[in-house]
Image (cartoon, rainbow over all chains, first blue to last red):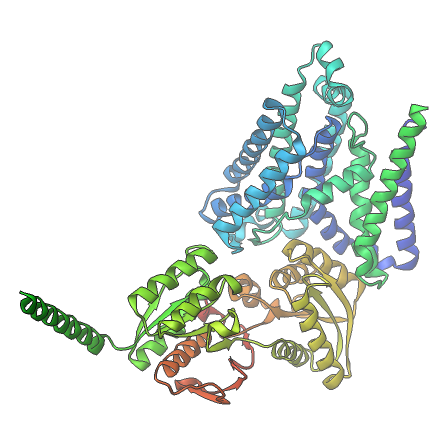
Amino acid sequence: MKRYFRELSVLGALAAVLVGMAIFAPAFFSPQPLLSLLTREAPTLVVACGMACVIITRQIDISVGSMFSVCSVCAGLLAARGWPLLLVLPASVALGALLGAVNGLLVAGLRLPSIVVTLATMVTLRQGLNLVRQGEFVNLPDRIQWFGLSQMAGQLVLVGASVVFLVALALAMRHVAAGRFVYAVGTDAEAARLAGIRPQLVTFLVFIFIGALTGLAAMMNLAQSPQVQPLSGAGLELKVIAAVVVGGVAISGGRGNLWGAFTGLLLLACVSPALIHLHIEAYWEKAIQGAIILLAVVADGLRARGLNR
Amino acid sequence: MKKILLHLCTAGAVLLASLVTATAADSKLVVAMLPKSKGNAYFISCKVGADKAAKELGIQLLFDGPTDSNAAKQNEIVENWITLGVDVIAVAAENKEGISTALRKAQKAGIKVLTFDADAMTDARSFFVNQATPEGIGQGLMDEAARLTNSEGEFAMIVASLTASNQREWQQHIEARLKEKYPKMKLVAVRPCDDLKDKAQSEATALLSANPKLKLIMAICSPGVPGAAEAVKQAGLTGKVKVMGLGLPNENKRYVHAGVTDSIILWNTGDLGYLAIYAGVALAKDELKKGAKTFKAGSLGTFSIAGDNILLGKPFIFNKANIDQFDF
């Protein structure tokens, strides 16, 4: 109980918000809009899982938003050229993995700081995309949206898939050797190396992993609308990093889990619709989200001081 | 010897002069049009109108620009045109200050310069063909929203951000118009979408469930319109909640044809190109002078001039009936 205090406190905050909404704005829980909003967060959840792994290894990847855009546009163009979904999906994942491998190679191979490397790739990819597309939308064929299923079925598939993925990965992080390596490298890379783990290889693979997940998420987003905006995914990095940090993953590496990241994401994602339902001005949205992040960071700081004593 | 040389020179000069007059005689007035980017569908649709004007006026139209929005490349093209000795240059400036030096140089070389779509520094051109004033956009949007809802009921707005100056300005004109003319309409929420279609969709979804009496969503940033339309479609409220706003035809055609989005408001880009060419030719022929209050452009009729801005006038409304005629 004490060990998971941090995660449980976020869950408590989320529960408080939901109870508050049930009392003051029960319309918040109308099933159809709620399902639509959850579907919109499904791709974000997949990227947040990857970001949690990256941050647990004591790295960071701020290029996910740009990778997301590049994968979305490329997948969209392939789909528009008539490629079947069964080919577009692996292509998008492979492209994401490739972009992630570039980050990984620079960080793990050349031992460059990940914040600088991914800042550079973030800007390069974003501007490259702007140059090529000039903001023009990609219009998709009708069969892409909801994978050709009904809207309800498509939404359930996307939400279901993201939750299944979350559960599988969370269990793997705890019970599979590779998952434990990630924690070991983030806690103390030198100790991990002495224990026979190759920290640079783990780091490299984690960057490939988040790239592939970003490609997957781009597809999950693509399947929700009949067109792709090249700007799609801008700001995604902030959203997922915030979710992960709020959820109790320590930015200094080695600590936290995916359940926390999931709860953090839901808590932050609630803010905007909750304000709309309570008819509160939009100015508050980012202020409240910022306050939540600040609170989480302060809690982590206090906890770290407590440990050092 | 000297004499022979002189004769040769005069002969050469005469030959040259006759060549020049020959080309001038059959190639008429040359108007060069410089878009921000020549492959951009928006400017291609401006060119459709410009071509029409060129044909009507019997002038030669040069249309060239960077392949991407590149301010330095724009300067290069202007320099080339100065060397070539065109009569008029019409520019949509990518960089206001950047292009102005080259344009001043062109003016010194006797070329008439005007801007369209995006202005340069005022001393670097004679006139700016202004596609829309903030007041015109705000009133156009509000009037169309009122028309779609029979001037009553709740509506919500999606903006790019709460602080961007152009968005603030449009919003103020919309709210002023609302207060002045449509007392039975009520603006219940203004939500930012950060220029993201996906976020606009999430915001619109929450707006729809939080405001069951909502009659219309107005988006005043271009990604906001398809985003709101997708939300209305997914909520199964097509036709019950109207969607309209400021946007581009190609991003909205699908929703307009499906009956989700009712109208898109922008200016008629073809008319913008047409007007720019007419104004350029009138400048070259000295028919359009500083201080003029109105200007007549062929089949489009008379336009008013505010200072040195030739105003294209009321925004254009794209709907089911006409949207397929526009490709940008």
